[in-house]
Structures are given as C-alpha cells and as structure tokens.
Image: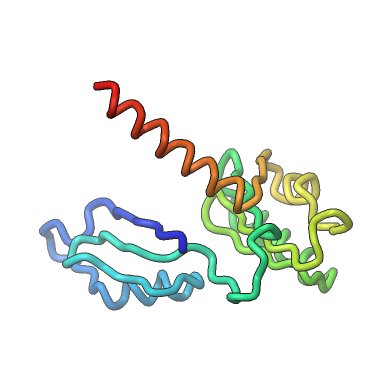
Length: 150
C-alpha cells in the first residue's frame, strides 16, 4: 500500500478562518483517496495512493509527471476527449500528475503520452507504478548507505 503525506501551509495557525479537519478529509476523499486521516488541527493529512480494485494489475498503472499543472480548460478538454472515445482506460488528474490505468495494456491504447501532452499543451513523462516503487526503494537504499558512511 502506498501512503502519501500532505502538509498544508498555514492551516489553522491563528487567525479567524479555521478549517475543520472533517471538511478537509471530505475533500481528500472526494478525490478518490481512501483511509484519509488528519493529524490534530494542523492541516497534515495522511492518505493512500490511487484506489484500485484488489484485482487490478499494478503493471497496468502509470503515473505521468507533467512539467506544470494544466489549466482547468485544458484538463476539461482532455477529460471530454477521453469520455467521447468511451475508452476503458481510467484517467485521474492530480495537480501535475496524471494517474493512468490501462486494463488491456498500453500497447494499443489511443490514450498515449503524445495525445495527453497535445491536449494539455504540457510536456511530461510517464512511468509504470512498479518502476516508481523500485525507484523509491533504490532511493531509500541510497539514503541508508549514505547514513551508514557517516
């Protein structure tokens, strides 16, 4: 299970505008995240990554990292195009990342990186979920080795 941590700046740090944590959790859950938990009244949130069926194949999940966050009109255009093609692929945009699930594999899909970049007018690069997991593991190993040398 992948766990994410959000640390929102200036949440409930004095002032008259207080943000209720149950409302904040509801926003995160509306994005499709599961087991969302807040820490105190601080705006710190822990959530799990993309919610997939237990039968889903992580080899078919990709994350596309964009150079910037697409504007709302570009996002809407991509979603409209995607829905109009009645594709099986799932597409979820979260800031500068797009989570893509290809149930039949990516090989023959029309939802390619080039199409996404063209619709959003933003360059990006995509990686398989398992590759990303390995990158994190390698990063942790390097961090551990660095600590051991000190």
